[in-house]
Length: 197
Image 1 (spheres, rainbow, N blue to C red):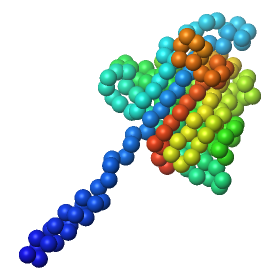
Image 2: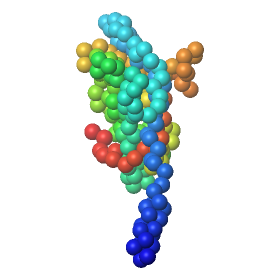
Image 3: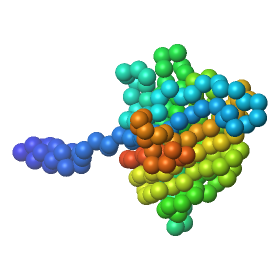
Image 4: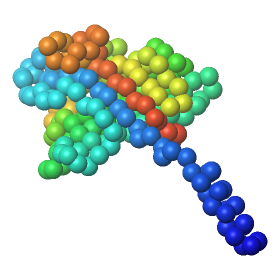
């Protein structure tokens, strides 16, 4: 009798401690990527084919999607690190491989860095540049589990020395509020942002 009561109590404890599974991190990026032909001598060299990346990490159907969002409290603000990228069966990546920085809640992100991939072309660890020669990141809202904002890059050299731009999109495609700025949103984030370097 005592054993059955103990077993029932343990079973009840297990049932009570089980909650709903954690929600997956979701991400959304609306952007355009192109060669920056405002740079003297730069010829057209191809654009990102997909202006919208959206969803949660999955391996199928292809293209696979890798989504990550990490947010740590820091003083009165937050450190953040996010990624959202599609991978094709041949290993090509398209999307943000890393955007990170610090924010007190809204406005320009401090110490921001941007890394992105566009098939064979990549830009890596690009710092702010005031709209030229760098990548600027603005945060619209951030808390312990979500972050949204905008980014733009201009006159940034990729790994093949082509000048690149990252901006938003205009109608009739999926449109951003301002065509000069790409937009991102992440939810169900976890801790582990670390330092943005």
